[in-house]
Length: 247
Image (cartoon, rainbow, N blue to C red; front, side, top):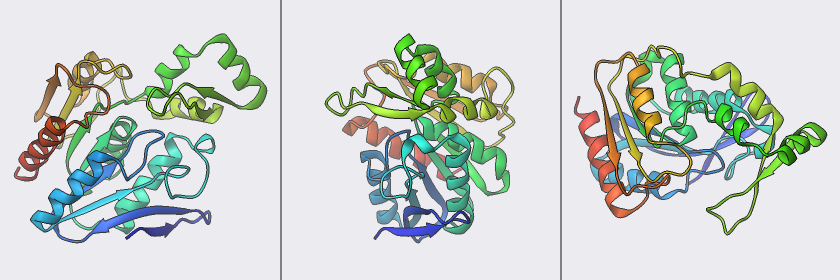
């Protein structure tokens, strides 16, 4: 059942929490996604079968949470994840991050190293705002300047565009991770599709090289797309999570 966590600014973050043994799993969804995705639900079912704690949530402006996407930014969504980690979960957590959630999971590990058991990134997209800025058309840049937002094509929802705010791009610069050492010392696994049109597979190798942990592995899926939601992908996810939880 969906519950809501009230934040100091009066907004509410939607979440679902399955009590159980720890280490638990905290699932961080991607940008413009929500906690009802196939990967989150598959992990929740798997954790339920094991009696393991599992938590999923919607960022501000996503899913059932308050707000609109264009009002959000990386720092705001990191604060949402921290609030869920601090106030809903208990004990050490394996943080699973999908796409933008892979960026959030790394920032969580830096902010709360004592609470993080391990990390599992699925098409992890750290610094995606920086790459997104470079792909904007002149028309989209003009729209950003004139209105504070722009609409981008969404290949997953029948061509329906989605909206980003200028704040997302500008504020994201204060959370960039690539190009330097990332002082995360817990075990890390990265699963990356080589047919991912949003995140180049080489980024997973760069990320692995930057993370300081000696216990890190990258799994490349030759026919995997950005969603990594096919039955074989979900099994791969369960296997990787199970191996990490045993460490």
